[in-house]
Image 1 (cartoon, helix red, strand yellow):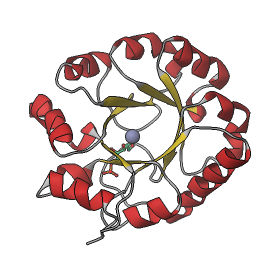
Image 2: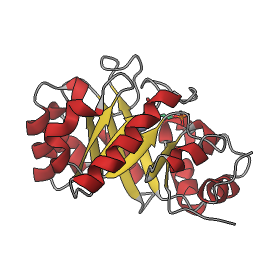
Image 3: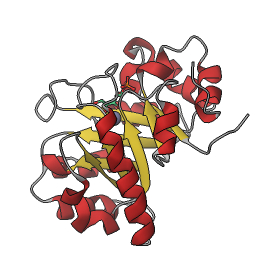
Image 4: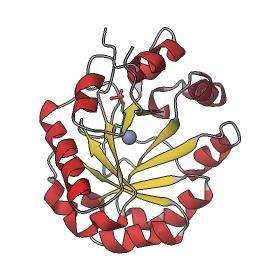
Length: 222
Ligand code: DX5
Ligand code: ZN
C-alpha cells in the first residue's frame, strides 16, 4: 500500500462536547498527528464555539500539536491569551484584520508558529506580502463556520499555487486544507500538494478512527 506523509489534524468542532477529554485522547490513540481547534466568534463566522480556557483545559489531555484556527474578528485582541493556552500554531484570517502583518508579528513574538487562512473567495495574491512570515497557510475548502460541508473543488487550485510559490521563493510554510476532507477527497488533496489535512466530521463519525487515519494516510478511498 502506498502511504503518504500527510499530517492528519482532526477538528474538535465535530467531537462530542460533553466528553471532550475522552475525544481528544482518541486523536492520539487513532494515530492522527495534530489537534485542530476551531475558535468561532459569531461575527467573522455565523457560529460560536469556545475560547482559550477550553484549549488550556484540553492541553492537559493531549501531548499533540495544537493547531488553533481563529475565525474571529480582529484576532490581534486575543493572541496573548491563545498563546498562553498551549496552542502551538495560531492561524488568523487576513480577511478579519486590517493589520495582518502586525498580527502575524504578535503571534511570532508570543512564541507560537504563525498561520494565515484564506476563505474560498480570497486569492493567494492577497497574502503575498506576508508569505515569508508564516509557518502555515490554511486553505479553507469550504466557507468557514460549520463542519460537515462539501469540499469546493475550485479552492484546491490555491493549494497547488502555494506549493509552486513555496518552491520558487524558497519558503517553508506548511499547506493545510480545511473543510470537506474525507476518504473520498483525500487523494485530490494530496495530488494538489497539501501537507496537512484537517478533518472534522469524517474523523469523529468514522466507525473506527484508527482505521480511518490509516486509510487517509494510505491514500485509499471508499
Ligand atoms: C470550518 C472549520 C473546520 C471544520 C471542518 O469552519 O474551520 O475545521 O471543523 O469540518 P469538516 O471536516 O467536517 O468539513
Ligand atoms: Zn478549521
